[in-house]
Image 1 (cartoon, rainbow, N blue to C red):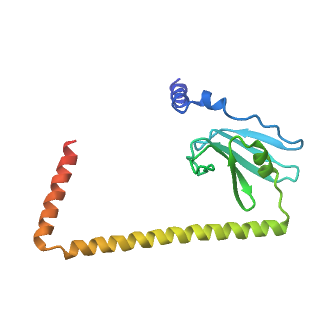
Image 2: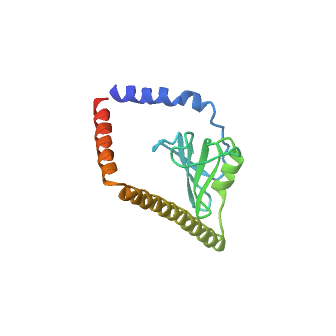
Image 3: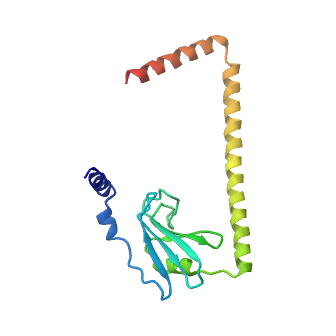
Length: 175
């Protein structure tokens, strides 16, 4: 009974019944085998598809952008479907765009297209790593500059800094 109550509380907080009314109906093409699976990892809906070619796709609906990120034309986060694998990566589309969802699920690449998609995926990942590295270098530079400013302070300023830090810590303890 305790498990049921916990699940009920989550249903209420995340408004699952209201959410269910916004999920579109999907008519799958003939020959596709669809396996409904539990919605683990904060997905609202999860299923797997076996295509007539024998290839498999994993699909989930993320209504809270908690598993990834998808933005609409206005650059605001919005609910989305994610399909994996899709052209060597993942494919994402708006929750209401069933046609695009079905296209991504059914997309089958030739061997050459698959290799090209893998290359694009690796390049995209490399670009993301470079961007993160640039951010870390920028933060490191800012930290070194801030530390240099602290080092350059007169000694009596450092004493005042330590006193202020202790006072702040004491205030935090009192809360």
